[in-house]
Amino acid sequence: MRRVWAGIGQAVESAAIAAVGLVVCALAVLAVWGFDQGFGGDPLLQWRLAADTWLLGHGVDIGISLGRDAVVAVGIEEAGRSFVLSLGAWGIGFITFWLHWRSGRRLASLPLIDTAIAVVLGTAATAVIGLLVGSSAQHSSAAPNLAHAAILPALVALLGMVAAVVAVHGHDWLAAIARSLTIEDQWLRPVRAAIRAGFGGAIGVLGIGALLVAVGLFLRFTEALLMLESLGVTPVGVVVMFLLQLALAPIAVVWGASWAIGPGFMIGTGSSISPLGTDLGPVPAMPLLAAIDPSAQPWMAVVVALPVLAAVLVGVLARQSLLAGSEARPVHWWELAIAAVGGGVLAGALLGIAAMLATGAAGPGRLETTGPDAVLVAAWGALEIGIGLLIGMIAGGRSAGALAGGFAVPLAAEREGSTIREFFGFGRGDDAPEPDVDAQETEVIEPLPAEQPAEETQPVVSVSTEDQTSTQAVEPVAEDAAGDDREAEADRSPR
Image 1 (cartoon, rainbow, N blue to C red):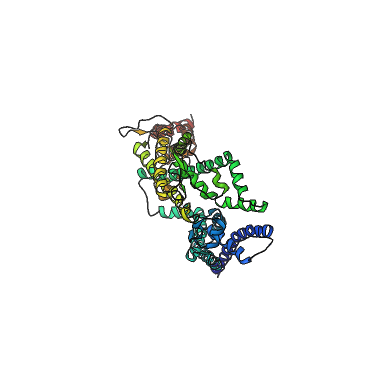
Image 2: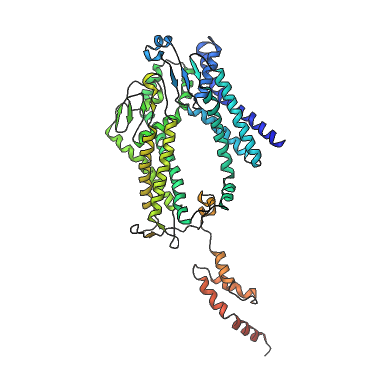
């Protein structure tokens, strides 16, 4: 019964989370409807606008058929043709993901079966809400894809809860796997470094994309204001437009990262925006797009070096932590190569997935092709980040060493370990090396005879304070223990 109530509670909470996103979208639409239109017109149209916005925020495709009225209003023949709007406003979907992440952290405290039931029912509740919202927003002019409406919001909720539960129980689960499966230590270190360096490199490149978007808006702030004024929006419309830009911010960040990598992106068929050249046609009147410089400057080619520099920094950090070694357990050149190549491939794959999510149709006609080429972004990202990681790992050593002919590079000490738990960084292999006091005491005490008094062993332990000297201190004590006992008895005998 407890499991049933836990599942029902999560289902109600997931439905409430979906309602939160819908309310945010509805409030923005109602503000424009009330202040700018005086609550005139069809109220169902306002609901459909809010529902379509929420669904777009979760990647749902929406079929648009505006008809001849749109051709008269816009003056473009292509506006009267049917098209699919598929460019997701992922800022809205982030609300669903984050709130379900918080729910997942709470569910992680329950037994595993209870957690699984709650996650399944929460996902199902989100799917039902998405299907109901998509069904209620069906219209001849705008019709959301019902299959997408049921699957994609539920998938976002599922990812949020599962990611939170794994983050809480990852240590225990990896420890259980480690009891039945191990990895050779010679492969453990470079593969683990490749995984972490790949994630770090991808995050670094996305951070560069966000920085470039912010710099572009700052430098072209006047153009953004002029574009906003051309829309003729009211003060309330300005606030709504700002919220819309926030919803599109994740896409802008990915576009900025694609531009920094080199392939760039498109806003319409035949266009190209990259550091090496810009061929920009008509674009939608979105203030966020004012960050794009219509003419490529020669200095922009230098921007391509930023992802490499970010990868170099990640490589240095990985070299001085995950790839730190010692004279007893050195780092070889092939370990650096595996970590750099593997990290570059993983980072390229992650950036390619992000580029795929940031690509879609933003309007009719030529705008049906908008966003970066995911394959080119993945390929160039893997190449640039891989080179940067290799440079950083070679240059990030704490001490000099040869890398040619199979020579090892001695660096800082690293603890032994080869289990799956340590492979993912949850074991003690990533912790700072523990002092060797316990090992030294064991080496000192074990060779001593059992009958030797404890007070006589204390001076021996206190003397062995330096590495690799404790064994030498033990041997003479063990050999002369009997002689010392005889001398002590002679001293205590009456004279």
